[in-house]
Amino acid sequence: MARTQGSHSDITGPRILDAAQRLFAQHGYAAVSMRQIAGAVGVQAGALYNYTPDKQTLLLGLMRTHLEELLEAVAAEPAPDGVMDRLEAFTRFHIRFHSERPDAVFIAYMELRNLSPENFATIEGLRGQYENMLEEILRQGVEEGVFDVPDPKIATLAVIAMLTGVNTWYRSGGRLSLPQVEEIYWDMVRKSVAA
Amino acid sequence: MARTQGSHSDITGPRILDAAQRLFAQHGYAAVSMRQIAGAVGVQAGALYNYTPDKQTLLLGLMRTHLEELLEAVAAEPAPDGVMDRLEAFTRFHIRFHSERPDAVFIAYMELRNLSPENFATIEGLRGQYENMLEEILRQGVEEGVFDVPDPKIATLAVIAMLTGVNTWYRSGGRLSLPQVEEIYWDMVRKSVAA
DNA sequence: GTCTATACCCTGATAGAC
DNA sequence: GTCTATCAGGGTATAGAC
Image 1 (cartoon, each protein chain N blue to C red):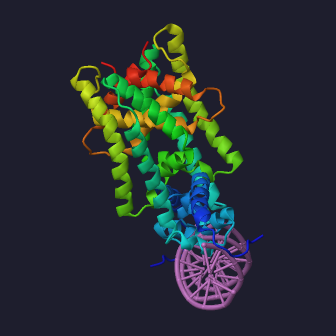
Image 2 (image 1 turned 90 degrees about the vertical axis):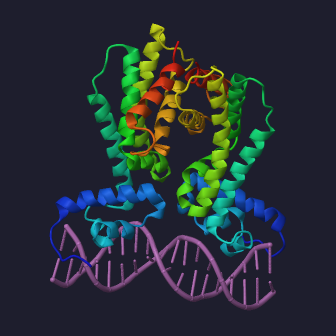
Image 3 (image 1 turned 135 degrees about the vertical axis):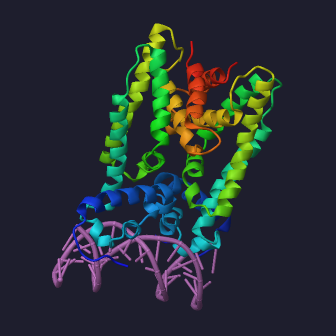
C-alpha cells in the first residue's frame, strides 16, 4: 500500500541509497529501474528525484562514498614500523574491510563502465590513492632488501586482485572464518613478494 | 543505408556474435539493445531472431563458447612431468589465453548475474572444471612437498584471481610485453605457493 | 516531501511481405 | 534471410496538486 503524505526526508534518503546499493549489486546498474528502487523503499518513482538529480548521480555517490570510506579507514589504521608488518597490516585490513561491504565493492568494480569520463576519472583517482599505499610499502621493502619484486606497480595490482578475489567466494558462516582467511592470504602475499 | 535482400547466413551469424561480444563487454549486457547489435552488424533488429531465439541465449552462447574454448585449449597444452613445471605452464597459459580474449573474459566474469539458474549452473560447472586443473596441480605439489599451501582450494582461487587481474590493466603495446608480464606473474605465483 | 499523472522514448519480440 | 511495421510494456524524468 502506498503511504500517506508526510515528511520523511531524514530516513528516506539513506533508504534509497541502501536499496540502490543492494539492487545494483544484485542485478547490475543498467538492469535496475528507478521504479524498482522506489518500490524497495516504499515510495513512488518520482519521489526519488527529491534526493538525486538522476540515476547516474546515484551510482556515482555510492562509488565515491565507498572509496572515501576506504581511504578514511586505511588512514585510521595504526601503521607499524617495519615494511613487513605494514604489508601484513594492509593485507588484513583489505580483506576485513572489503568482506564487510560486498555490495559496495562489487559495484565499485563492476559499474565503472556506466560512469561519465569525468566521474570515471574521479573514481579512478581515489582508487589510485589506495593502490599507491600498497605500492609504497612494496617499493620501500625492495629498497630495504626485504621484498623482491621486479615491478612494484604490477605487484601492487597483482596483490590487490588476489585479495579482492576473496569477495567472490567468502561468505560469513562458511567453511572458513575471516581470521582463517586472513591467515591463508597473508601467507601467500608474504611469500609472493619475499626476497 | 539498408542493404538489399539476400542470403548472408554464413557471414551474418558470426558477425552478430562478434558485435554482441564487443558491445556487451563495453556497455554491459543489460545496457545493450538488440537494435544496437543489429545496427553494428548492418541488419534490422528482427533479423537477429533468425540466429538466436532471444537475447539471453545470445549471452549464454558467448559465455559457453568462451569456456569451452578455454577447456579445449588447456587440454591441448603439453603437460610437463613435474608439478613445478605444470604450475608454470598453467600460469603462462592462463595469462596468454585470457589476454588474447579480453572481451570474452570480461563478459564471462561480469554477466553471470544475467543467467538463469540452470544456465548459471552450466557456466559455473565449466569454470569449475578449469579451476580443478589448477587445484590438482597444487594438491599434488603439496603431497610431494614441493608446494606449501594450507588450503589448495582457496589457493587456487587466489592464484586465478591474481592472474585474471592482468586483464584489468594489460594492453598490447604498453609498457610491458606479454612475456615480461608472464615472467613477473610466474615469479609471484611460484613464490606464493612455495614450500 | 510525496503523490498522481504523464511526456516521450526505447525495449524485446513477432507477423507477414518480399 | 531480411525487411517493415507493430505490439505491449517499461524506461527516465518532469509537472503540478496536496
